[in-house]
Length: 234
Image (cartoon, rainbow, N blue to C red; front, side, top):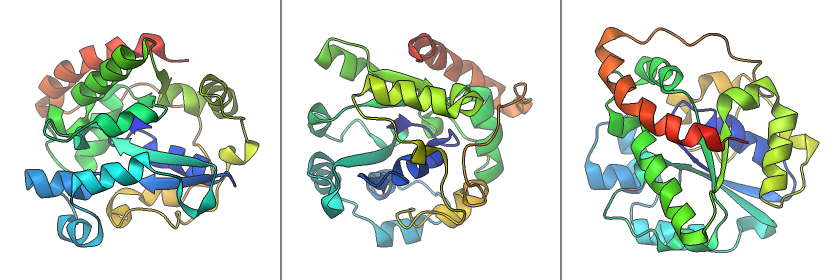
């Protein structure tokens, strides 16, 4: 599942984690991304200490068998973590879904947790490039789901998504226990407060939020990438 930050991605991981047949992995390349870029992210030291920083080793695990004897392996990937120098050949044996969200909603939420994001922080350009790579290599557009649609109709959209990737829908995906998931990344205390309080998908979203003036240029940069993927949303 290819997403960006503040994009319903953790709730989607919880949905798949609620299935009895599915292992999950929270942002496999986060530590490798921080090690390579040196970016100052919240809890960066703890992330680097806790997780694998060698992208080749991470990729090998991503391409390997699901852990714990599970039938399926849900990987919650942040598109911005896939730096140009990281080898992407591990992707070729996996099924890919792209989770999108309107940039205004992403920016309004992200700015609260980490101020003054730039386009590279929120993953829109990288997500479009990854979408194009999958489409070129498979000859078909990969599945796209919009977080707005999921929140408006969780059962319907998740059902269509599962059908599109050949996975039986499981109603267990619609609820999960409050308090987080055992496979949350070490960064969860900073980012996951709202979803830790949840037991399912929140209701339909309202009007688009106001974006602070200093983020208006980032919104303008991100919109074409979102608009390019939105027509593919199921």
